[in-house]
Length: 526
Ligand SMILES: [Zn+2]
Image (cartoon, rainbow, N blue to C red; front, top):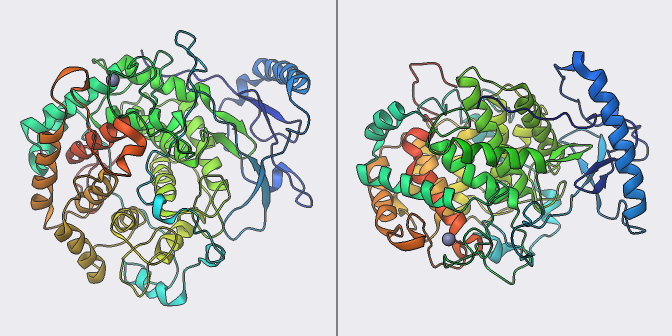
């Protein structure tokens, strides 16, 4: 199996009628006074225009049919009921986005009993404390002038927030040889590698028949055999795209792709196909929200990394590139004017949702996907706006800072070009290392591990030894749960065992999953 063939969706930037996605009409964009699609965003070039006619005709026929169908089936008043306006960066252009309705995990799986969807946030590590604190400040969160020297101190020569992406962070060591060499170099052990393998086996055994994964372990194939499914009775969304993206990222991190012959080739292929099929065509791009921008960001990141790893083997796939490009477009258009992303596109957001968007856009950019000029610098402004007085003590939506959001903020700053040679920043990393892993909070420990790995911090070995051995020790060893993790803490409970297992696997893959962002790389970074 080489390559993915992705059917061409309806024209991405048409001025024409509403498009249909997943049974829901999507209003392409256009708000009064802005004059239509051409004002909203640049559509990526389609290199396949030369074989367009047949596809176009088919598209027109099908779109028209679906449109008529929708007119007959939609309840009155449902159209545009949940439209949102989004503003991109400094631009005065406005487009209308629509949040697609989340689909039941069962949608493509008729072999199991209907599930009552219970939606949960896959992270929520800090949302419990801060959710609902959305106030006037959300609108006023812009980087203050006194913060700007801090950015300049990070390697920029001016007072701007220009983002210069570091050249490291490549995926080239996700090979059997790379795992061996870089595992040894950065601190994997035989036991930690066995734990990764056991985690992947557990994840593969929990893939659903439609290629997806769900946080809800009461569904097939687990059917509740594992304890600690996603938390019930909460109204936070737990998008199937987020679960699927997280599981895929764990496989990709260990070098498994749909191109590689290996035990998980088919697993990865089916997961990617699921994400391709569930993508919602919106005027602003391709949408994987399924109820939350968490889902979109994580799915896009998985597809971006898939594309990078495909390109490495010169099996780069134009359709996959287009998918990532259109997904990145949706992300850019869904950014709030303060630089953050929220649960729904265009809303003021927080550090945790924004983190997935930033990481996925950086991954997309490595594939030469064009993203809006201001998106990353605006995101950096948001990250900086959550700390004060150059203390690199990052908060959820703003000060005060706390430990988990500080771990995320430090990692994001590295991805956004912050130099580790700036002493206050390096000291903040040292403080992070000194505080040590939280052990029960995988969200904190995952991002802290990324930050310390990417910066090649002097305390890495000490940090790694503690966390690595804790994870090896706490992995389930017996029975149906073997290979998985779950920690009893108020936040880790929410995404359940699937979320915890994927995050722990990625933490143990860190040695070879990413080349450090800030280390001299002597070969071509991907
Ligand atoms: Zn299970």
